Length: 455
Ligand code: UD1
Ligand code: CA
Image (tube, rainbow, N blue to C red):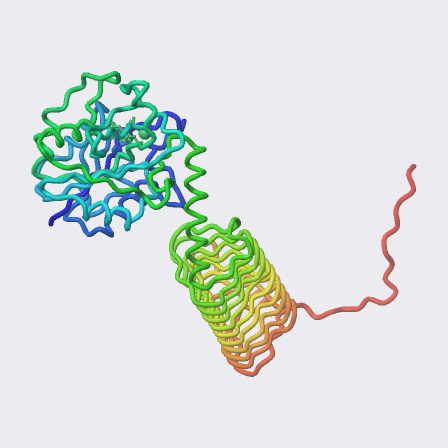
């Protein structure tokens, strides 16, 4: 049966107290609406229709994609009115309604729900709540069948005692939807066109309302303020920590681990506390990440070690390579197998060959360093002349003396050496020592200045 998804995302989110439209507030680094859209995509629907209103331009700009249709709800007249805006051209056997501010809904839950919708059956996601205040209540007949949904504000004291709440998520037979929405009235306490009134109409039309529940209540929790946003964030992070541990990762403290993107992990990976993984991260078997590291869009090959307080972005560590503590690896950094980068070393667009080392206090940018070369402490590639970037090329087994400045463009052949403190402005042939510094003078009998006596 064909499927289309409608995502409601027109609300203002006043309680966020924000210039950012509510659905763009991030959970795990991604807009809430982005989570909902990605989950919807996993259902492989024929189309995804997003109803936008407040901050419509901003929302569209941020999330536009070829598989999305955007529909403007200029005035927020209720959830039923919102869905109606997305109907033009809709021709699907099943329509699933989701919410842009309910980001943690899981694919499996939606699949269970969709298995229950049919030409003569609505599927409704409900949740049993300790405190259902504010929620629409699921009203069931003596036979246990759902009769209607009554909004909290419209509910009688007796109805308010019902603890089964409406999540808002439902799947309906597409051919019926337009007719029901046309018949909605706003004759209720809030003066809104309630999508929930569709349920009583469906029952009157002889349809059955099937219900499903989420695995966890947090799946259907919306974020109306920053406190709820933080709760969703925590829940998301707990969930990702559990998933990683189930895949064989040791997290020294799952409560102090944050994933803001996607990670693939091998076995026996150890991640210490306060590590943040962002973007797309690949971690192979036996990798260790020390405390307080940020790893973004990077690949860590088998057995690589990232020591405490390192910051990696767009980097690749080869097998058994290591970096840190306090390493900064910027985009285009590639460490060959068993290469070593120590503390306070910054690399950008730089390749270190197999077994090469840069142990301390260096900047290597736009550079290629051959295998087994050693970069002395304080070495700087002067890659920028104020207008253009230039490359530094080092062959294999090069030894750079401490505090050398390599003024690019410059090439050093295999086995070349530079004396400590050299400013290398010209190419150095293979197996040659280059010394580019003033010769030391010793001045015998030289007297230090002495302090003048005050007059
Ligand atoms: C709605 C449900 C209620 C349910 C609750 C769960 C209705 C009438 N009520 O109530 O049964 O228990 O959600 O949280 O559906 N929206 C629009 N355009 C509008 C109105 C709303 O896009 O004109 C969007 C909002 O941005 C929000 C969602 O729809 O994402 C729900 O709207 P909200 O006003 O929060 O509905 P509730 O009163 O909470
Ligand atoms: Ca709500």
